Amino acid sequence: MAGRKSCEKTKKLSEENTMGIDFSKIGILVNSLLEKRNFDERVEKEREKMANLNIINIGKTGVGKSTIINAVFCKDLAKTGIGKPVTQHCHAYSIPDSPITIYDSKGIETGKDNTAILGEIYDKIKNQNSSPNTNGYIHICWYCVLDDGNRLDENEVEIIKKIKIIIPVIIVITQSVGGNKTNEFINEIKKDFNNNYIDIIPVMAVPKIEESDFGQMNIKTHGLDKLVERSYDLLPESVQKTFAAYQNTSVQLKSKYAVTATVFYSGAVAIAALQPAPIADAPIMIAIQIGMMANITACFGIRSSNFNFKTVLSGVGGPFAAAVVGRTFVSLLKLIPVLGTIAGGAINATTGAVITFAIGSLYIKVLSSLIKGNGKINEAEIIDALNKAAKNINMDEMKKEWEENKDNYSKSESQRILEEAKRDI
View (tube, rainbow, N blue to C red):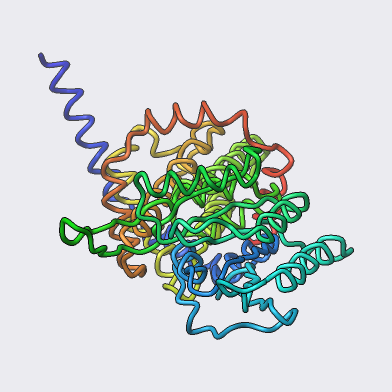
């Protein structure tokens, strides 16, 4: 019994000593690094690494092409104008604050012979994708068709077949109510292609009230997630990250690349900890972790103008660190990388990597939650959410997750990250 009381007393003293650490020193280190290399610039640099993505959006007037784009990218493109003409019947415009260009067909009318217009658009795709300038390649076609039961025109079918030879095509059935009528329409389209496989996705991009014999029907949004996921699968690997970052339908796609970044940066911490002092000290660890958070921010397609990153990072170095260390990592106090030489302890490679992985995982969780809620993102929200998440973190789970992922990190990429961190301090 006496032994048990002694252990409890020791544990209590340990916790009190941990909470008594001056975490403002961590904030000072964070701020000094941010002064040397602005965090906003880090995020922009990560964004600039993303490849240009070009999507062509074809369909007759009034089918809801712009509504689809607005819904996928959460932008009101009506305010951006019609873009610059690239042919007589095709205009190009950029998704604001992104490396994405949309090519929009113009002048395709119901009940008219659109053969010449469609041929012109096809020639644009063919010429652009045979150019030596790979930045101008069009990567995917969304061919929008209204869910009104009318069959595709013969010339539409032929153009889709020709485009499909060059780039992937998804037939997007817009304003789709669903049910038997939509299924019959899909089957008719399949017949047009002689039952050769063609991607067909019914979508209701915005909620709609439909009148019926039984009164009003409230039709919920549906199909956007399938459109985004299938588009991602069909896109070349070189532009998948760009699409994942800037689409706003699937948080899972954003998280996929953010988790990969977290693994790479955690690997850099592990490599740093194995090198002779003073490599594995607090400034190096903090530089790696700040770089990781910049990369994660870019993976979520968030602009630095949305909130004050410096305040957020200072918050991570202060109250966030206190919450994590004080309530969860008491036994690991002298091994925590953000403390490093401040705590007076050597850095264990595995422990340093696990805790860096935990910080990245928490940041991903917080950004995912904020984006899902479609709330205004600001530094106060992020710091508050990080602190709440930190209280519930399970270090054993984080260690297990790191162990499952550590073999996936690229040693060359992690070494590059470490070298960049050394230059930052």
